Figure 1 (cartoon, rainbow, N blue to C red):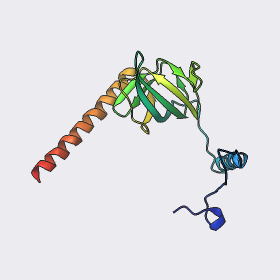
Figure 2 (figure 1 turned 90 degrees about the vertical axis):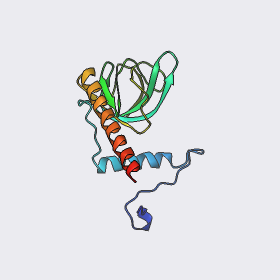
Figure 3 (figure 1 turned 45 degrees about the vertical axis):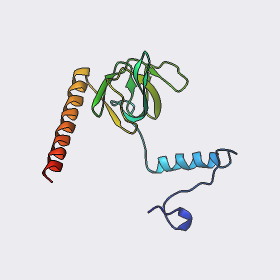
Length: 158
């Protein structure tokens, strides 16, 4: 139930055009205002959390994922978990293919060093060690296998 402010609701709307550039400044002002009102803040000193934007298998580099850091700071060498996959950040590049040592909140980066290809939209968390990341990923994988077996057994009984 989205109701715009002009109709008595609470959803801010701004007319804008990416083609002509009309209204872009107003849109940015409204975003800044809304972030200030809602007190949207990320803590750059905590462990990184975020979301996978896309992933692909790259010849020579293995699994490559573009992630958006939403909270904390992601550093080269950090161990992380993506659902059933884990990894250790070997390389990290920004959108201009410039190598980075760390990425703060609201920063999209391309990372390598992953055990598999995470799905777009999957969340990631940074953990203390690669061993902990591997253990969490294996536990999640085994849990998924168990639930698949239970589902198959239920279908067979019907």
